[in-house]
Amino acid sequence: RDDDALYAALAAARQALETARDDLARADAAIAAEDPETVALQLKTAEAAVSRAREERERAERSVRDLQVRLEALGQQGLGERRVELDTALAEAQRERERLHREAGAVKLVADELEAAASEARRTFLGPVMERLAPYLRMLMPDAELVLDDTLTLTGVRRGGREEAFDDLSLGTREQLAILVRLAFADLVAERGEPVPVVLDDALAFADEHRFEAMKLALARAAERHQVLVLTCRPRDYATLGAPLHRLERAL
Image (tube, rainbow, N blue to C red; front, side, top):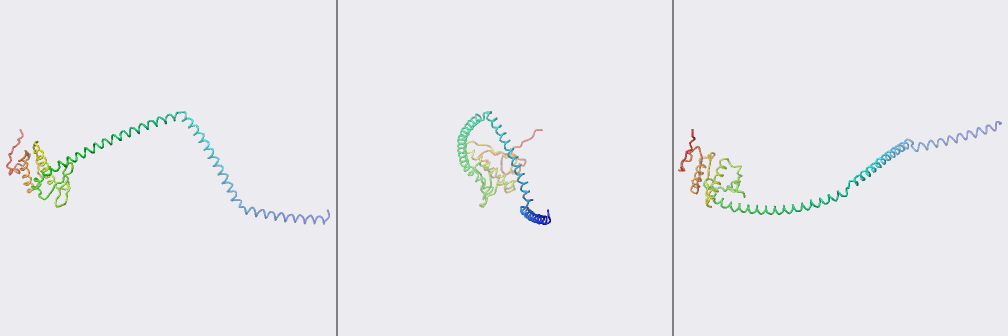
């Protein structure tokens, strides 16, 4: 071809090259705008999620198959019949519980009535005991009042409007009050025609001189109603009572 044709072809080729360069620049800009790294990461994450979902689905399908097998096996064991048996046993147990509940209520009612009767009997008995205890107590503690509960247990002493627990009293005072309660009981029994002896074994070991003399008067008063035996290794302490003295000699 001649030179003009060649120059024309060269110019057309250069124009096509510029156009291609412009297209490439626009493509590169579009790719950069799309952030290919992020897109690739999103694709990778999505593929991993799909893979996990596929694995979960496979595990779920296996679990369903296993449950179907177990249900079929349980159905062959007659669970329906077993449920009927258990329902019957439950009904019987409920009836038995109701029966025992009624019996327990009846027993509790009887027990409550007996306890009420016993409490009333104790209260009825407590008054006479306190009445017979008062003269003895005046000899020992004129300003005091003994406190006994419903079981006739000595629980304390009331003096000057203040109550002292029995366990808080001194050992000697507790011993002396216990003896007075015994004397009062003995008086009550004797008055009902059933006299009983009162036996004290080496008692009043913790009493001071004043209390000891008061207690000897209490013993003398009780001895007017029934027999009082005092076992002691200190007979001189009781000489002023004028009571008969009997010595127990040990055989050699």
